[in-house]
Amino acid sequence: MSRHDPLSSEPVSPSADIQAYLDNLRYVRKLSPHTLTNYGRDLLELCEMGRTLTAGPGERAVNAALDFTTLTHAHIRKFAVQLHSRGLNARSIARKLSAWRGFFNWLGEQIPLASNPVEGVKPPRRGKPLPKALNADDAIRLVATSPPLNAHTATFAACNQAMFELLYSSGLRVSELTGLDVHYTNEAAHVSAGWVDWEAAEVRVTGKGDKQRAVPVGQPALRAIADWLPLRNTLVKNNAAKPGDAVALFLTERGSRVSPRVIQLRLKAHAQALGIVTTVHPHVLRHSFASHVLQSSGDLRAVQEMLGHTSIASTQVYTSLDFQRLAQVYDAAHPRAKKAPNK
Image (cartoon, rainbow, N blue to C red; front, side):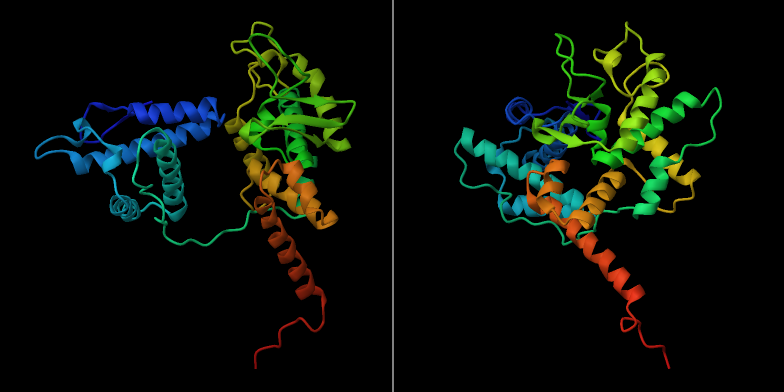
């Protein structure tokens, strides 16, 4: 992994310490490739900012060696201020500080450090936005409505409907959806990350932290998948370019496993065609699933398990959504809740 300094044509490469830390995250903590990319980018930025402190007069910062043990609490605070001055939002700064803090915690286990210089450095305050969720009517209309079909769009539409139904039915992350296979496969070139268990009427998926879970699937979603399978079989290529494509549940017209980006674009276009005002992406259906199940059941622990949240705190945000909905119903229905007219 490397990136280029805007003032130099020479690549900025990670130090041996950063590379060892990323290897630890990859092989010991088993973080996802996407998370590793973000951590690597944030740590390389720390290198670039730190090197400006140690470069001698007239020396390019990119060529200056960086001794992490020389970085202090004041340095990290200065870096956070620099990030804020560049227009970075509070969420992005918080993510970078978290990545840096984790790195120094690990580094302190490898070599003597006086302290973790990132401890106590806080990003600018930010409001915590609630996740967006569709109301139940819009969610059902979105996943149950299929566009007018012809010979060219039947396969495309059947795939979309099966994917959208499954996202809402089981609250899957988009990466979990794309990782689904038609059945469990364990071969040298490919081991299933997720698959459909038809007998149990559920999907088994591998979520964050390489943790597996089973999530129920509703009958409409199972029917949509069953309708899609015969069309899917016409797209399968036994000589698929990537291992696992031949058993992937959802395929593109070329016979390759569908990507998260493809699903995002298709879902957004479908919602716009139906006149749904909210910008809809796969995580909106996950939020809608969680909110609607919690509204009906009130069982926070069950929702936590189905979503694959490690901490109940991540699931508790949906109680705020539920309260908002109840408040709206009360304000609309209770005669004493209406505001007095302006005089």
